[in-house]
Image 1 (cartoon, rainbow, N blue to C red):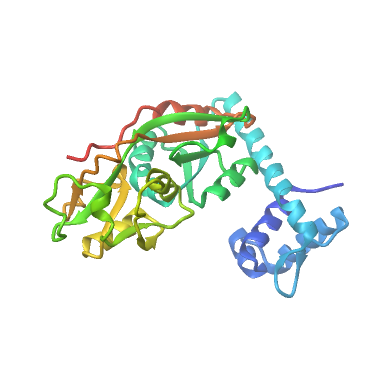
Image 2: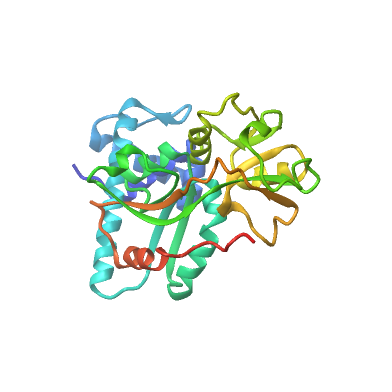
Length: 301
């Protein structure tokens, strides 16, 4: 078998784009060159990997996909190890997290890190939780930043979690909302309120549902959105109230919102940086870990 890294990159690009022309443009190749690389790869594997008429993975292609990703990731790890051995400070870091975490904390964390490491390229992917763990296992992601209690799988020997800090949920309303001048409310007082929340698959919503699961009568989620920024905008326009992570509040830009304390929601919520133990941990990754741990978001006042 004589596979090349170029063939694997081309296969992954076509599989992601589901379009030969778009893959060729992204790879800066001609479309015939992309097609030729795919044909050669299929010949080496003795199996068709892609349906041509309507580009999609064949069963063999779907089977090969995670292996192709792991092979490329291993090649990149080996390149990084060589760079480390000769003192090269350049590198790349790929993160996976939720949209809310990416918006709320990553700008500050990345700015802090890149101040001393300007040659490190950082890529952030905002993904559903299941795809983050898949990306970690397939070595597409170096790090995950998780909001909420860790899933049971993370406590196995293959994962290495690092607690960044603890957050809390807070209730917000617009300055014109009837609850705006209320310092404290109980959960029972919210049963008639229009509640804006995260979509069910988001880690933030899972935390909220877990904390509210014993609430009777249950609170009704009238509007569901994918990020804290979208939720805050809806709240700002008076469409309802919302539970959001405290980390998502910005004292400068969120002055149109009122924070209302809910005594029943005092639980501390962990925000955790996670990596695979079996990955090669480059000098760049170790510096990232050392710089990021202990960084706290600005206090909401």
